Length: 193
Image (tube, rainbow, N blue to C red; front, side, top):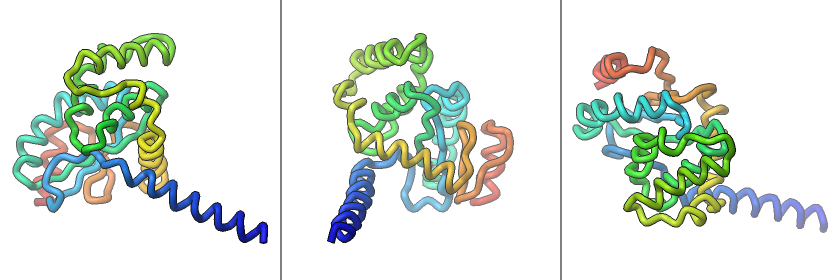
């Protein structure tokens, strides 16, 4: 009887864990039915990821996403606690919109500074409170459902795609293995259209 109870608990826990993670919407831009599905595994404290968002993404959005050719999904691959907390902020309103994510990358130098997680969180909290997103910082970074979603993204990235660094792009389930710049990405995408 005890074995049955333990087994039942494990099954319920497993399903409740999956259910809790599915409550959080992924951050996606573009037509859900686009022919090309681009996944970006990134860390919000990664300078190369900020470069992607600030210098490559605008052209990608204008020439491919807004034309319905590419759907881009931003996945979490936090490299440290500050990135984990920032990812929680990006997902906090749970609408799948990328505005907060892009804002955090654009303002990365304003909050990714300090010697301790408390200092980093203080800077992150300050820019969020000065924004017009209306987020409750403490509520966001203490949201366990969002945290589970973020960590599951990271685990899936390692298991399914062997992610080792950020940013890593996956295009229609294949790793983009060229140097990451707009020219290389554009050539690859144009061949797939």
